[in-house]
Length: 561
Image (cartoon, rainbow, N blue to C red; front, side, top):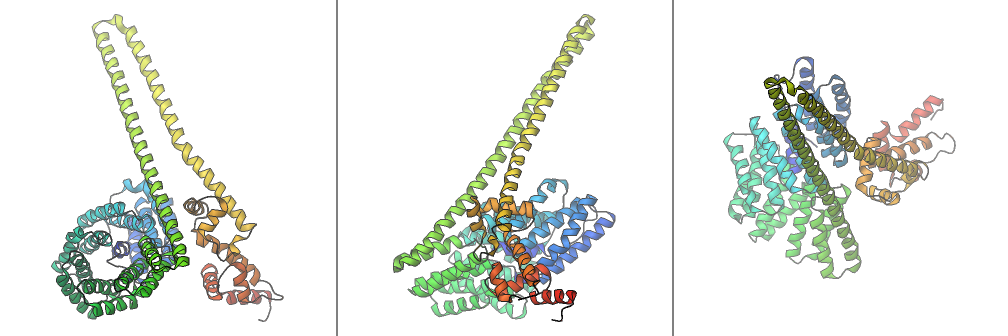
């Protein structure tokens, strides 16, 4: 997808990512010489790859540059590389890798001040908070910080997108107070005569909030104005949410036929949007059908939305889809389907509870460390102040009477003892600070080695239904710890890790020269559900198709294939 085909004003996640792909201006006051020129070239390259939707290429090209920045101690280049890599993984719905690369930047963020970098970084963090953690509070906090930097950077396009992001967090929570942000975005798009894309984006976002505030005629007028603008603007990515907003407004006005037609158009153009928006269209259309007592259509729409959510690892509307579907199935009496989706809903609530507990634990630990550090610093300051006063008194007395020189010596010894105590405390604190991470490292490594044993000895990668949850169950752990372990010690996500073993096994079978197994047999043996899925995965991993790989082997060994 192209960058503009990824901005969806309903989902703040994808909207801001286009802003991250905007052309960049260099900051010569912060960069000098060859590093600055190279970074500017990389920014232009990242922009082109983002617009073309070549996220795999962006990651592969950026990785060597990131390592070069580390070797050269180029902090700004390193931070840009890590943030753009995290952004690319966010486009690809790979939240584990997003978390990994964002974590790399944490120790160095305070070392540079760059408005554009801060805008991108907080935008990606806000999007990650929504997609991976459903943490609206953290998301809106990051978006507001990004907006502050966009204002300092005097970037109107980024300001519009960030206002849209903030507005849409209110929108997906059905909170009408977000209308002020939508109005600002729309007014900026008109005031500064931005291109048609941003005017349509602002109009659709404002129309959504007008509808949410019960101003249906104003909303419909604005949406129809935006719809006319789409005839001559490159805004294909905005069609799904434009027609969704039109459908909701028409539904509220009692215009059933227009609403039905608009929902159909939203589904028609959903191929141009992100998976979160596709799931939202299914959710809203199901509610529309349920209101019209068309329960079969409502059930199908919600099941389709749930399928999108699980297939692409998107959690944004999963809870609401599962809740609405289980309530409907309970009323219609389909006990088998009801029990199936009720179990999924219970699993979902447990996952959300686990994420929240982990977040609360991390926050409490951070608060505790900050409190302990502040207390230690305060105690040290008090101790040093007391020692200083004693020393000053000794000097004063020594000037008055030389006889008190012995007292001065005593005070000096006390000061040295105090210093040794402080040094010992500091060393103890350092040892304590490193103790917990070391234990966590060992635990993660042990978990990864057990997973390696499952793959190498038990060949569980051959199971077609192998998943992160299934592997975690086999290992007696939870999927979050397993993901972190694979990311830390394999340097890749869990699906890519499984594919690595499958491709290695497939390559071995393709090398068999006698009684050659068919591709379907190989695909089934290594765990793929179809030849097409196997071929696609093999080509991505090896750079050629299975048949192409077999021909290369035959050519090397002198066999006339």
